[in-house]
Amino acid sequence: MMVNTSQRSEAPEIMDDFSMEGEILRDALDKIAGINRLLGGNKVTLDGLQQLLRNGQEQGRGREISILDVGCGNGDMLRTLADFAKKNKLKFRLTGIDANPFTIGHARQLSAGYEQLDFRCADIFEEIRSENKYDLILCTLTLHHFKDEEILTLLKGFKQRSRLGIVINDLQRSALPYYLFIALCFVFRLNSMSKQDGLVSILRGFKKADLQRYSNQLNFKHTSIRWKWAFRYQWIIPSI
Image 1 (tube, rainbow, N blue to C red):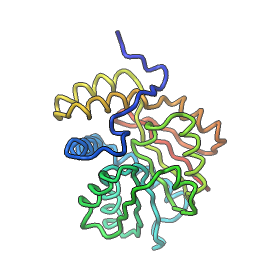
Image 2 (image 1 turned 90 degrees about the vertical axis):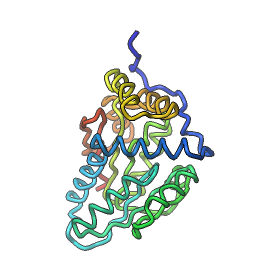
Image 3 (image 1 turned 60 degrees about the vertical axis):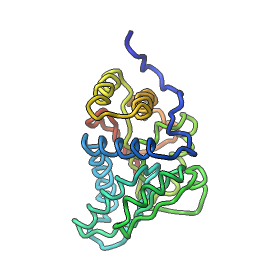
Image 4 (image 1 turned 135 degrees about the vertical axis):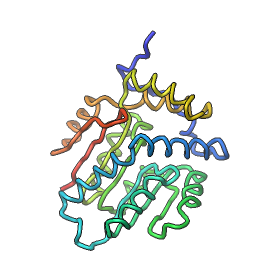
């Protein structure tokens, strides 16, 4: 029987236990980042960021751009952005937050050579209630961890806390990527936790109609929702 993807799953992921630590988690974080990078996932977020910078006419002005990465994992996305900024002579101030202290410690270790990166262990719901403001807020492979009502709260908060806009990069929920991921597990020798969480992540992912519904509920204007390889959506939400 084919897997049912008609509705978002609410099944928990092992990684959602924020007290988790150790080699299994470290391996999972690094494998997720590696697969995402290999399949072009970082480029999806970077492309969205560049679009918002162009819309805000910020590129090339020499002003420091503050960027928040929500659910930063091992920090791979932020290191990609730091390398991009250096190559293009841009000034980025990069902040990554994650609710797991072990994950934040691992990200700091991997990012030791990047002075412009700051990592904080934080509850994202507390962050959006704070007075902190950013030019851009990025959410790569993180939004699917939340239930619909939580997503609406987060998106509303992101909009209030971002000056230029938000880039969401997350999984498409459908049967094809679900079964392809099973094959991917063998190729990359993913541990059992990564395999289980990966399949649950896809079932907690999105169809385009889900993202359009959130946008309508929050009265977001001029958003862009595009399907991207590999089986994910790029959702750009301008704040201006």
